[in-house]
Image (tube, rainbow, N blue to C red):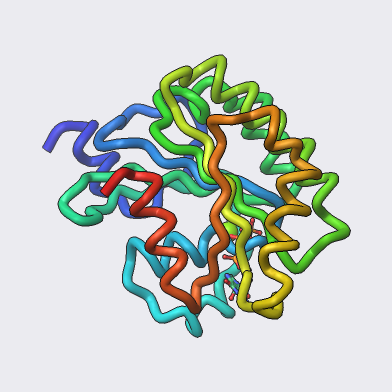
Length: 195
Ligand SMILES: Nc1nc2c(ncn2[C@@H]2O[C@H](COP(=O)(O)OP(=O)(O)OP(=O)(O)O)[C@@H](O)[C@H]2O)c(=O)[nH]1
Ligand SMILES: [Mg+2]
């Protein structure tokens, strides 16, 4: 087995340097801490039950996993949302993180209104880097943890996030409501992937 295959065979690789194994389409999940990124990855791509995600530890650094989803090979990157790791991703690892992205999922905890402004700052940095390093890449906002929002308030919440993020200025950015407890999550990811 070559060095490259060895690297890829390792499940859940901690990215420290320029990525050596670019196989499959690259998906990047980024957003503030505890918004649900690792949970989404485990539920959608690893068939974990949503309830099991309550025990997931905070992600350290940037993790990468190679998964198969509907016969598509995907390289899924999970950026730890604690500020230190986000800054590391946006500064030291910028090029390797943002290069060759197919879809960048920006995850927002829809129940945390107070965090939307901070999230917006990282959203803007993410889109700038995406445009610079992956001009063909697509940005998708996941208004996540929607199960915590009463049904009649969901539309208002999506509008509110769209307004704060000024999504009217980014016509190419899509926003989907998601929850690990609802089918909306797989639907959103399939739509983003065009399947
Ligand atoms: N109610 C609800 N809780 C969720 C949902 N998705 C994730 N969670 C919970 O949110 C908490 C944080 O989830 P993580 O997946 O670890 O969040 P993260 O974004 O990876 O956090 P960092 O690694 O620190 O950036 C866990 O307790 C999950 O069970 C959701 O759709 N609804
Ligand atoms: Mg995580």
